[in-house]
Image (cartoon, rainbow, N blue to C red; front, side, top):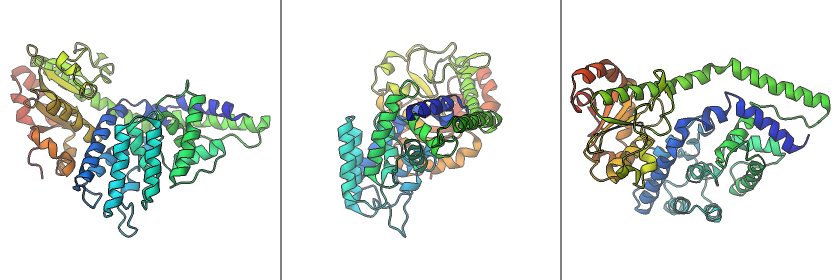
Length: 428
């Protein structure tokens, strides 16, 4: 059976499989929200390296904040932080205590941040490879993917296994020249199947990840009719198992449902208090309370926000309350059920520090009560130092659920929410 025909069959089965990384990660609404936050975090890493304030440990560094945010992405990025964890006995990856290597890593990130040209990215990889930094290999390509998703291919063991199995290749882990060779092969494969995949290389990386994880049986080397028939039966079995094992996927979707429910509470409470409401652009069509979450809410941001260079981030803030007369944001809410708080905070910083006259707005991180301790621990880290410029408050789910109706009926302005939320200033 021709390779192109094999790949086509596999991709078709994979796309419709409810448990595939395509359905559960690539099409996940929250996936795209991290891109700008990760870019901004890497800018902070570069700035700290240039100023020699990065430090000599991974824990507590700005790099840990960014990589942790990547590792919390579903499926293919789980474990992405392992490559960056400081292993003192092996002295790897050698970018924490070795200043010259650290600077080389900073130049690599800076070049990739500042250029969107393919040749510049490849040249930056070659320059980093020549430095010969012990323990810093192609896993760093996961950082590049979030900067240039149409140019950089994510990288991990399962993706390499999937590529080798499908293509009959022998790509080895841990070498940049091997990664670049695999990248060229993946770009060609993606081009052949573009109509079934995407310009975003996360789609084909997810496909190879699922292959390499053993989820999908590869076609037999012996392409006799009987062997091919058995392979197609095995593929059908994967589909049946996916339907039977939807429970785990349902749990993940329930998390999204809870996120939508909290947004709905904030939407209705803001309306009751007389504010215009903005729902995150990628959430407004979600089903809620018999309609769409964005029903009756603003369809466009006010001109002062829409024209701002950070508008693409601001429009993804989960909920905004705006004054009807001035069109100023009165309150901004980020709902964090299970995911990293990092990207949500970055979006609120873009609004508060980037758009004039918005420092005085209220900013709320809305999360389960059990996450408060974790949130306060996160805010004690250097990467969140700029958050101290905001009066950022923690609003627990249970307090919102318990008091929202009373606030809607008897409250005015922001007094009710201020009473049930606690300040994160001075967290230690």
